[in-house]
Length: 87
Length: 380
Image (cartoon, rainbow over all chains, first blue to last red; front, side, top):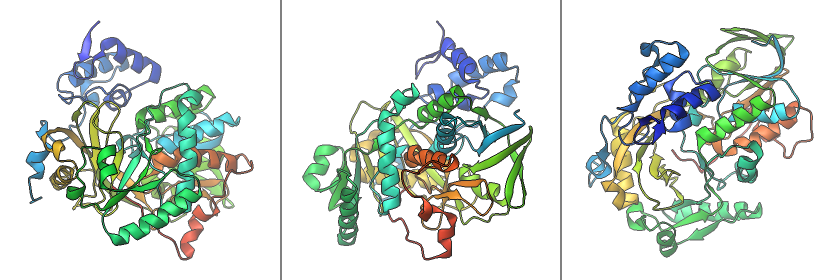
């Protein structure tokens, strides 16, 4: 068993199964189905690995597969952003 | 690609997929055409709340009937949809809101919803994390059968079940044109071929306006950028969705433990804007700290944007149009997910000439020619 997404505990087998069963062609679809890359590290480990699996299974190039990244860049405390008075 | 189909649905969001299931179940050949992938648009970006507490009877009925379907949906479709019924707690901030809340509760009770007005002690009992003072709340309404479901699981469950019954879903397939003759639907032209059909259903969410234009129908809908954020997962703290019409905020703890919520952004724009903003992040974080002070110490993992497909009265546009065979299923104004099960059933009944469970005549686009009654209970 090969763990690909450590935050959400997803294996290479889970990913291949989803690609085959649902015909996934994009990381976004795998994310929706498996919560891949939605955990604490926000896919910093697993997305590249998954992109490689997708490239192998679909014949697409890595450039076609890699995603846009959503802010914030790192996890940040709500209180730090919101402050005390909203200013 | 199929050269013909009984029904062509544009858009594989929750409404397109649910409708495909309901129509395929009735024995029709159905094709869904999706420009991106399943749940790419509002469905995959939504808070996935399921609320029955509305100010208009149309929305309340659609939501109530939908909850009855949601409650059996995992069994019916054979896939878990992640339904949790932890209730919706709606803050009441002042006497004006209290007056409106009493009116809403009376109507909601008349259609059989178990909704009630609660005060500070019970607010804290239901969600100890809340700070009524910080919320500026004098009371709240609470309906325990409201809740949320997983939007991905629900949409894929409908899509898979539709496919099992013969529906075809074409992803990465864009509708380029819709041909009519004599004000009647003839065929749909896509970037991958043409399909002859009698019915086209416009489930394209924020892009519905563009689809309607192809048959010469102008729609009043506007795409409005909405933002949301999600935190790291925590152990279970509270079960209800918390919302406020005055502040526009909504937040809940999802099945996996993360806090997910949104609030209208100071920079909210009409148009196809997709950039997340720092002003939203700041505003939402500040308000979360006011509503639920312990959340100040929780990490935000991600923020994103999506579109509300907003109509002038915040009610959906459903049903037949002046073009024979062109059916509208859009304009959900931020609550398309929660009323999809019943909406899909009603439109399937309409398309298959069955007796309809309830009338949708008042939700036709023709209503904008007269005086409209606006849905007041809107957040996000």
